[in-house]
Length: 165
Image (cartoon, rainbow, N blue to C red; front, side, top):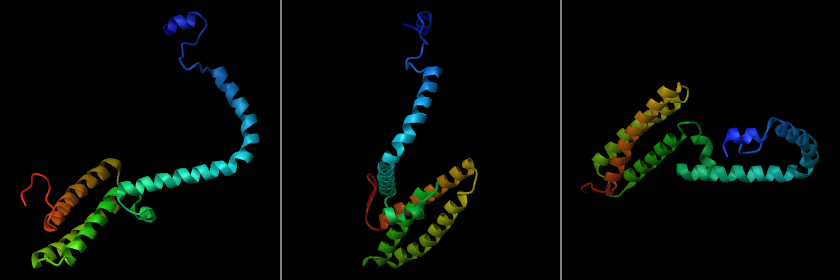
């Protein structure tokens, strides 16, 4: 039955059955019931909200590849990039400390650390930019970071699929 047919038979045409009158009645009932129920439910609601927030934080930290305690360091719209930069910095440290690291590897580490510092500053500066400029800056930082990460992995002996060793 279409909307016009429902209206002709006294219905509103809404599939949900919610009308302005029903909504007003629900609000009136809620104003009476909720204040009476809230004191008893408040501790439960607070615990549920805390557990929900903790689960969200764990998921967000896992997605960034960091520990939950480090989340404040990687907040904001550039948080994912900052976490990637930190991961690349860890990779550079491992490369520098590797027993088979060459002088060329150590020179690359030194150059790349400077690049990562510039990328970090760029991400932090982009936080205050208008959305379009911020997104463009983040794309540029991401592309540069891809290059550094790829080279770190290559020098550590890890090659991408289809890439010659």
